[in-house]
Image (tube, rainbow, N blue to C red; front, side):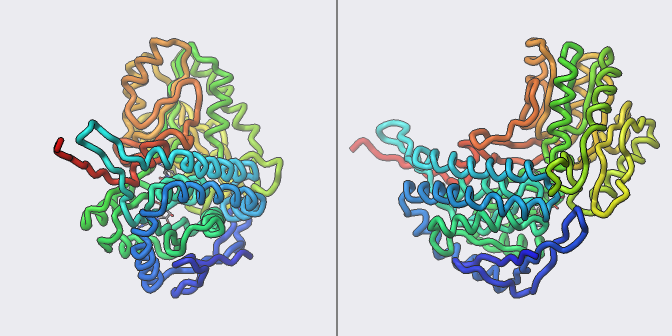
Length: 471
Ligand code: NAD
């Protein structure tokens, strides 16, 4: 049983509100205990973050970058232990957890490399200069699905830019955030510059955003919570970066290589049991290849080995909690009631844990809830389309606008689709696309602001324009 602590003003400590147990989604047994922060703890985080704001902002950027590089080195040594913790807490497979930790190291290193360039003044001409100052105290909220890489995508640029940060990490998956904060501490981040808390999320966000000293909120999670935070942030005009839900469409045109497409969709869709914000979830296939596509997809998805992530032969683990399989069941039943055909899966696995098997629904009508509600689980909904116009219309029907994918060999179709699909990214003949050097963003219910890349770094800076006279 892992016992975690809060990290406040450079000291690991208990929370004033007691503790809470974390249950493994594979066994439903307690695997870890987290502290619960109270108002006193948050007050101390805030006081330290405000106290350290100016000294950290004035610390030479090369020194801040060096700390990030050391953090990556220290974190690399922690990977084997952290992987086991993540697998136990979250139900990820061993390779999913270790790949994610590798990506978080790369994120620290990439931001360290960018820091000096992005903190330099920019001279517009001889008389005008732009300064890029840190925004100040940041409140960061991370979700449980990618607790290592999303934590890195927030902390690395924020700290490199010279901000102090209070991180409320996901209570469900504390290990990665704890490992990252330990690494930052060992790497020499001064006390008070970064804090880590767990507890009652609405209480923590209300308290932190209620302070005018906090100047920015960066949140990754559901649209519902993102909207609540935007309302809270409005009172003190705090800047928001909101990376929210998604319901990514895939358009498969008749000239696509069907077996490559099916393999790419299965690989990404069933990673971490479909609990990825930009996993494909609505698949539209041109009529002439529809049956072939559906047959191949069902065949490949049926081969996925489901079980506890600790087993190295397992390819897909459980969902994070009991609400996951319950949501899958509700969406499946609704789709079938409305005329969809259940081609694979569709029933919870009869074993301990929150397991839901790879599920494929075909001929799903637009009226089925799964076509508009983010499934956030291992279900694929497939429907045919006839023309490019119809495909674009179906894809753009969602209120979300995060990622979309298109499979076609025709350059003309690729150009048309890129121009007409809404959302934050379009990937052609490939799935995935999140990397340290590129920003992700959403439109509509998927949020706003940038995370990752130079734009994501700049999100933690405020601009100051300096005008001079010629004399
Ligand atoms: P959630 O919004 O309930 O929780 C996400 C995180 O926010 C957790 O750490 C939770 O403790 C915290 N949280 C919850 N209520 C809060 C509040 N009032 N104030 C502050 N923090 C609060 O979402 P979830 O269901 O746990 O996660 C899945 C959702 O996150 C999905 O909608 C998914 O698409 C989205 N997500 C988006 C991205 C992205 O980059 N766009 C990445 C991962 C997850």
